[in-house]
Figure 1 (cartoon, protein in one colour):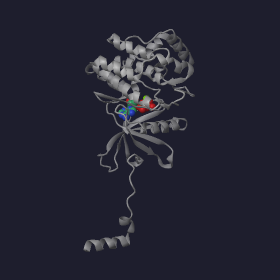
Figure 2 (cartoon, helix red, strand yellow; figure 1 turned 120 degrees about the horizontal axis):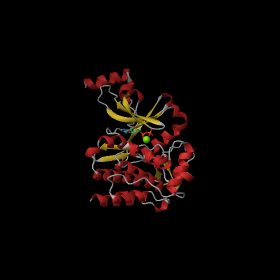
Figure 3 (cartoon, rainbow, N blue to C red; figure 1 turned 30 degrees about the vertical axis):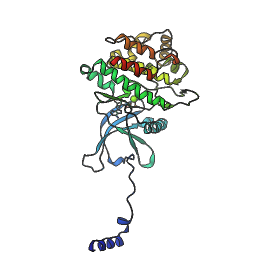
Figure 4 (cartoon, rainbow, N blue to C red; figure 1 turned 90 degrees about the vertical axis):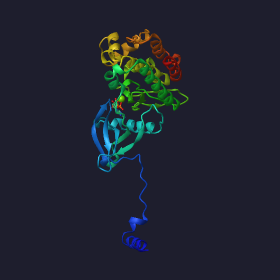
Length: 314
Ligand code: ADP
Ligand code: MG
């Protein structure tokens, strides 16, 4: 009885302690003051990604997360891009797509940050050159299958990625990879089947299909083309001397700006493609070539790629 009476007394003095329930905590809202930067993980055209510890208790027991924000110079023009990346990633659930954790909004509501799971091994572009000796061709094919699974799921949601490349595929462990970076991802209208880009300054041209370069039209099949280039990167262990950019430049000569695109379109139209990498079995190269059909509707689908690649692994 004494305890009950004590509570009554406390409640009288400080009603808020007992009667007011604590507000429900939204686990997807991260407070900026608890987000401690550890180091930079990487940066692309518009954004940068940092490794942080979210440590509300302040005793370094909090979890590690990857935090994506826009570089200050891009805040104004690209702000809506990061917001759309957040909205897209939030609605994607697949084992081969990086997991969304939440957002962090700065005071005043201006700059928003995207909080994702942290994948300690980085992107394939960093991982493969370092781990060449222990990564077999079967493992590369397995990564390729996982990328196709993720892409097939993305396509089923009517999204086109538009930036599929080894730099945007993250490594969870030596068996598992996940697609990251949905910064250029767009939703396509079902009746149209493609997306038209308006601003095209920073497009990854050497990963792009001819229709993207000439008409600025992106189909699901345009991602298949980029997947072919990504698979080429995997088979070369992302060796930068054999990078798609270097090889295309050796075909078209060193050029700048629009001229690069004009010449690239020309060599592709002539039917020229990235060469078969050293050590790449003919059937694997054959699959890449089926991603690089000039006409989008002639290209192989992600579903069919999964099937063919799985057969090769057996
Ligand atoms: P951008 O849109 O600027 O290209 P990305 O999302 O591709 O940004 O991230 C840039 C780089 O940061 C990646 O290539 C990768 O090396 C690293 N990175 C991104 N997300 C993660 C993550 N969740 N875990 C570990 N490293 C990451
Ligand atoms: Mg990127």
